[in-house]
Length: 63
Image (cartoon, rainbow, N blue to C red; front, side, top):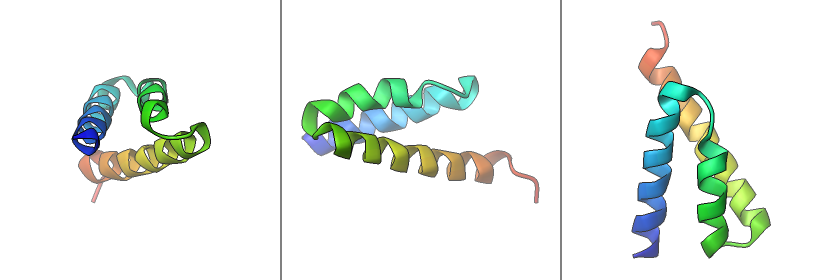
């Protein structure tokens, strides 16, 4: 169940920040910090940032 909550929060945060361009770390880091140590939470937030940027590049990138 924890995995589902984390995945849903990460997806929702990525969707919200697609239009604003900022806020992903502000939303995700506290949620990750509930279940993981702070250093792991920062690393996981960085991974989600990277994947979100790749996803945005695929959506709006020119071919």
